[in-house]
Image 1: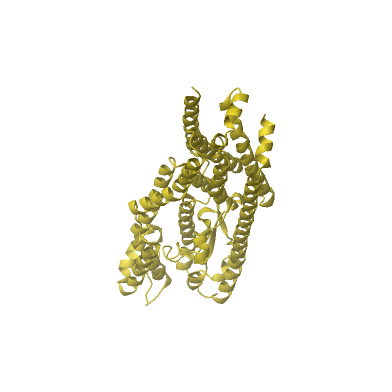
Image 2: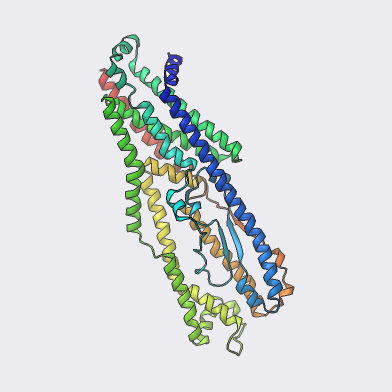
Length: 448
């Protein structure tokens, strides 16, 4: 019976077209992911080459004054891009994966981003997570909306009922064949991704695959419940497409609007302007005020008294530090609001399977907002480390030639966040069980 049902299913032209179409789109998404991966790797390679040449060129040109040299020199920190990021690009296409900073004021540099074509950002990337979240459900709906209703409408259901001992088991077999075909399609695409994108076969990939299977089962569970209502094919199709539109497009948009309005944030541009104003106004202030603030922030540098004269690098970098200190409140407020947005979104998403799956896929790929916030924190620590290393050399006016400038390489940030399997899988498992139980109850009522 199962083999016959499979032959009838796969023999349909619509089935073949749907599976081939989704397979082709899946491979196209891998190509887009490969292009993104290559771009990221090229950027990192170019950043390493640029930093080496940039430091060497400036060290040769500004060889008499280390304070002036460090005004120009930039040091780069890279947010490591995992190969699996090619499957779920997330926010990596809008947030920079490389931060190049001088030891001057950080807040004026922290939110610098790469230039992108606005039209490309508007259309977004068709990565594999997009294909899975948006397109797989449409094929599932097309395969299952009329499983029972079509045979009832054509008058063949009575024949099936008389020749089958258990009609419910027959319906389960129909769903099983379709579930197996979509999971097989998912497996083929991910296997191709392992080979084509060189994604390691590790816990991250297995979790990604497990989420994909649960997400497919979730949409089949929805279809199973709608089919269990025993309505006509038109009703099933309209309801399923309405559900798709609501929980994939409309509901996430409503939630995004709610979170944005609940946690309004100061713009990064406003923060940058605050930092720069705080720095520039120091030119017209008493130098002692600036230096007192600097010594309060860094007591270890009190041994460096302010030299006589109109300008010196101790006072200049103290002004830069004062700009960051004066805008610290706004900076912390921005960081807190972004953290709150991220936490609120994750909390709400637990009750919306589509949004939950998207967020979890991005977390696995380290392309979510949480990863970007950790990267910004690491950038701050990286900047502070470079400051504390070079401040004594500037204040002592160390000779440029005495420093081994070739030792400053591009550094890499590795996101230490571990995968929480309960958080990733439990919401989808619960939704699937609830929908299947309600569907089974409906079918049982019909047969009683």
